[in-house]
Image 1 (tube, rainbow, N blue to C red):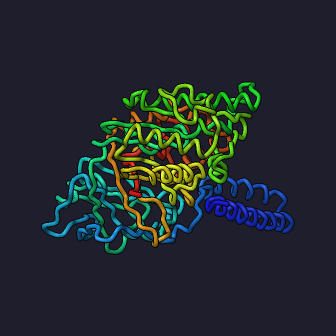
Image 2: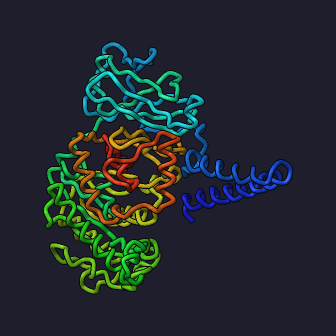
Image 3: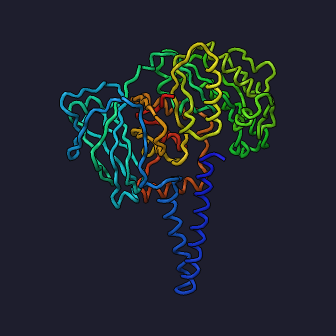
Length: 466
């Protein structure tokens, strides 16, 4: 069982215990006070839960994030005087450096009901970065893109529903311009490349998009059209296979550099456990990957027999790496992103790289987190603060790319083309969002109803050197 599954299991157990205690209290009140009181309190309690307590947050907002950055990372001295953040005299910042500021954030009493926000002002690129309701601990702001205004001493930090405490600490990470290099994005599923790295791969001098699975499961939306489960699963897989090779054309990636490998969703771990054993689809009644590989621009080793095996996956990836010779590979971060297919995607690439004569730069991304399903918190277009991390033994080296509004809009349109992000949310989720909008001040995304439009269309794309 993965760590995220363990956290979710504990969360559900605690919720069941809380519901049982609440039920006992309501029954007692009904017997001692009035029969109608439990009904009123139950409705009010449900509304409060949906508005303020429905987030999957598997840690206390009072916990400090615990980051460890590589030794010898430059730490320019900064001071927070009132709202103004100032560098020491004579300190200069590289304009495109990734800047991370650690400071304590403490919510006000309103910050327990409305999302606490740190506003960055003073230059041409104002920003807002949001944290957990009730936050009271060490957090890491992303100041990337603010180097010029910070160097001028004009950057202001203002807490909304929160206060900023303590002496801040700044790290400045310098890096090459990866947009001038050959980039290959490894996407476990169609839309992972766009969610994590559309801005990067749309700007790179040359880009390859390699999608590992057809993403054919959980096809209830297509069953509602009158299709049987197997037929719906195959249709969804074909659509997502099309998306994976067609949508990157929106960013100018040639069709000859978009590849769909057609393995089956949530089956990579089983393939890895028995490398020579074919592992078929859970729902599509298929044991041949070639149905989802028909749009590929060239043949790959796995096309010989179409067997969904780990050995075929490694052979396919090796062929692609030798053909593309990427200087940068963008792939899921195995420690930050808990999705099993994402972990296996990293493992497969790592295995193949061990046998190659050159070693490209590896940049990791996290489209999912273990312990906070809402991260990055806040609204579409806002900045992306660093995610919750509680393992100081792990060194993390962030790399941040700044996206203009036009690039964000193009990214949103690419996501809108993805069939998996188009269906409406369930009624219960839509009702929850309406209550949160009315009572908790949260806004949806103007680009689409799916939560990934809010989370992924941001002024930053955040990666991690591996």
